[in-house]
Length: 343
Image 1 (cartoon, rainbow, N blue to C red):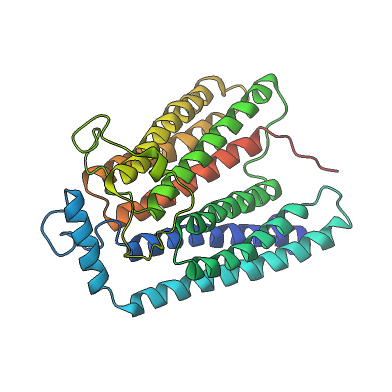
Image 2: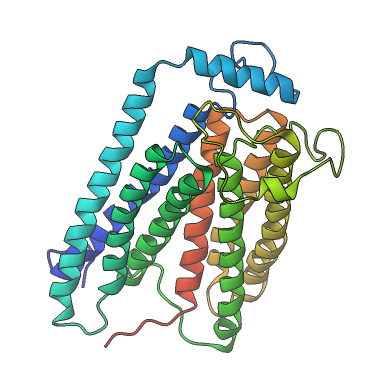
């Protein structure tokens, strides 16, 4: 059956693909809105906060944030917030239609996906409520993290739905190699999820500029850090977009945790991708190793560039966009290692 046909199955696939696209758009635009409104990096170019050089010290960073908050008019926030709502609204409508189509197809096909679309739809509406809490609780980091991680989870689930309906990236036939690969891919997915969490925690706590150098941090390999304060999930900071963030030792702990996580993902996922390139010829899965390796290396390169260029807005948004692509590539790889039921 063609994926471009007029059958309900083809419509279900196209609807799932459209939903995945809007979910990716929501992740990228959400990152742009958070980063630009929080004044985390350098929102202007070629200078930084109207100056020739980017802020270097904690005092410079604090002054830059205050200046950025004074300059930013309210209408900029308004159009970003409204755009986010339009994207979320479109995604919600698509998911309602996707869920209805799934229930209709379930009558003819027992293996038809129904529960995951329904779960994803409920998750979208749950995140809408979380958005209201974000405003009510003055942009608490934990509530903002719920939205960020929920967006990535929705993207992963929708991409999984689309993968199970298409025929280009087909699951390979069962083999001993694929059975060995499956738990390894799950570990890579877990590491990526932890790293996305650490990156999101750094974003919502304004810790992006805590280490303005690389590979050292503040000129040291292990600078003063306060992990207890930095990793505290709930605090009464009442952070606004330009509000006062964590103190420098706590922000440094958050940033260094993200760097350590990045190293773990690079070593393990890089090894897995190279392993696929080396042993996957017989099962014709070499291309999936390359599919993972390209966004992985791009993500690491963007992270290093962010540090040495002091977190310009374009690079920070690109970093989030490529992180989403890396997640999708790992979901694709896991899909390939799981034979699909056709009953």
